[in-house]
Length: 258
Image 1 (cartoon, rainbow, N blue to C red):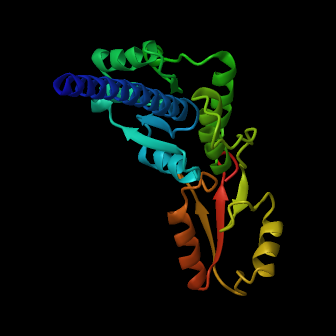
Image 2: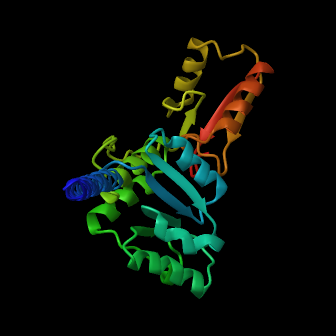
């Protein structure tokens, strides 16, 4: 009798253990499903937007990257030798002017587009490199920011990509509408200030104590330096150095009216 009771107790214990094990298994599965759902929601709605830049000149890349102030938007300069890695990015933006790539490299870009990665090669001079899978509204918006690539537009481009191309919901700052870059103007250290007339510019210099009476007048006529791109450390350094030497500096941003 005692042996039977012991066997029955062992059986009940095992039964209880199996029941608890099933509960633990179900609970574990539910936790994993819950965590997987959270991860999927994070990845789809809130994770950082990764943008690949392809074939941009260093000064262009610097301007685009420095304009970005959003922590949830990240840029990577992808070399032509690494085009096989484009599939991991949320948007691929290329500069098509002067782009020299092999048929294999072109196929790698096209494969990323075919896999669903948003791709746009801007200003492609070779029709074969004119690769784009954006819809007409997205293309028009992206082009409007790139055609006047000042600091404000570069920042808005990044924000537009995150919200409307990568389609994130959280940690999103709406993009501003594109603004035209000032041209045929005099400018100074404040990138938000420019002048159409020399008289206005000199009045500004005197009001802010930058003007030196009797000082030599020195014009800075930029080539590839765009004072409104956000990448202007070299220009600002030159302006400050000349002013400290007692000169009056006239930086000009113009092509046709220098």
